[in-house]
Amino acid sequence: MTVTRGHAVQTAPNGNASIRRYYDLSPSQNNVGLNATLAVSYNDAELNGRSEAELAFFKSTDGGSTWSEKGVDGRDATANTVTLGGVASLSRWTLGSELAPLPVEWVQFDAAVEASGPEGRVRLTWQTAAETNNAGFEVQRRRTDASGQASWTKVGFVDGAGTTVEPQTYAFTDTDLPYAADVLSYRLRQVDVDGTGHLSAPVRIERTVEKLELLATYPNPAQNRATVRFAVPRRQNVTLRLYDVLGRRVQTVASGPQEGRATMQIGLSAHPSGIYFLQLVAGGKTRTQPLTIAR
Image 1 (tube, helix red, strand yellow):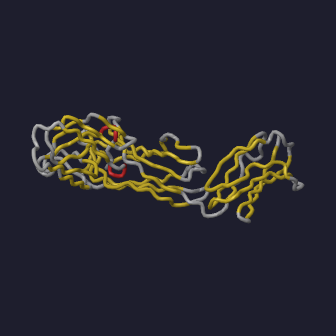
Image 2: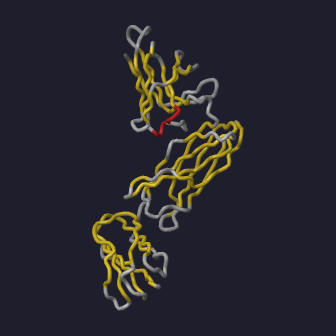
Image 3: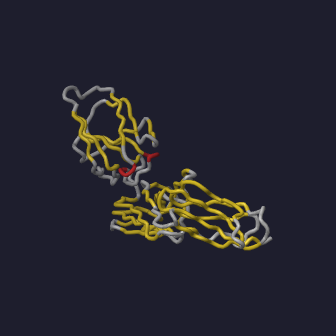
């Protein structure tokens, strides 16, 4: 058996496009009456806008000129595998959407950090080669930080071009970033005019911290609790303490190794009303922010 793996999109005459992976399977002897089971793996970056929940096997016996859908027995989105049993003969195989053809032919989807700090933003750009009844794109975001991964949330919507055979270019800027997220993932949910949705492959970005940072607390004035946000450029020991107006330390908020962005709540109910100062110390540098407690 000779197995050749390719990484080009395969396209059927009806416009259905595959993922960016295919296999040519060439047995050296018998190639009829088999009872084979195929288990094809893929990378998320190879999905070409196809939803993992809709992946099915497609077979070509003429080197990719024509294709026939062969179905699917199992999908594992965690392991990135799709399986099919009872295969009688082998040739060229790939994975595509069982909902063919898809309404949008993707060209690319990219994300880049445009600005860091508390006012950071992420710029998303994508292109399509053709669209059919495309109402638009729902932009979804997922964060990764010390607390783990949150579910996908909608952060915006961009109108589509409807039906067109002309290439289209789109962009969206996410300006409301969760402060403590050092890693963000984005994906697009392409929405048809009938409300049907198709998911793109996600893109992932990392936000670097370039300098020690202590943002203003909120609310300020505060009563019993306040939110503190700070960032540390590399892993190092950090102390965050609360001092009263006379310079006396009244509370240690954080102490120990820290890296990246952090958001935490501090309790203030044990302190009387007055003016206080939060002080962040790391790597021989100090950052200070005022905090007023008022009840």
